[in-house]
Image: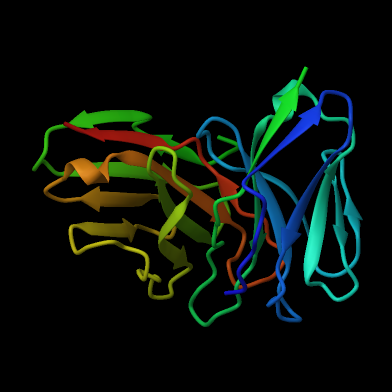
Length: 112
Length: 116
C-alpha cells in the first residue's frame, strides 16, 4: 500500500478556507486518493476521492499535483462543525486486499 | 435502513467473556469491512469480505477474533475470552464492490466495547 503523510494538526479560522495537505509519494498509477473525516469517534465520513484530475463536490475540493505525489483537500468556508480528524488514504489494489489503510490523519480545529 | 447498521451500540463485558458484534451493511453492497479504533488511536483494519470469496483476515490481531458473513449480507464479529486491551470501538463498513476502483466505503456508527 502506498503510504500517506499528513501534518498531525492544523488550525483554521471559521469562515476561512481550510487547506489540508497530504503526501503520497509512492502512489502507483492506478491508485485513487480518498479523503474521509471522523468527528469524535463517530464512523468515518466519506468526503471526496480522485485519481489525477481535480475534483469538487458539495463538501470540498481535491487538488492533486500533476506528478500525483501529493494532494490538498480544501474546505472552502470552514465551520465549527468541520472540526474533525481528516484522513488521506490511498486505495490499495493488492491481491485480496481491498480495505482502506488509515494513517493517523490531521486533526483540524476550526476556531471561532 | 439507508446506512450501515451496527449493534449493540455499546457493550460492557467482563474479562474472559465472549462477545458478538453485528453489522447490517447497506442493501446491495457486496463488500464488508471490520475496523477497530482504540481510544485516541487510528483505525485498524481487521477483516474484509467480498461476495463469496474467501475473506481477507490479515488484520485480525489474534485467534480470539473471528468473523463470519451469512448469506452475503449480515456479518458477526466474535471476540472470545475478551481482554481489557480489546476495549475499542468496532466499526463496520460496506461498499458496492471492493475490487472496483471508485467505490466509496460507507461506515456505520460503531459498537463501543468496554472490557472490565
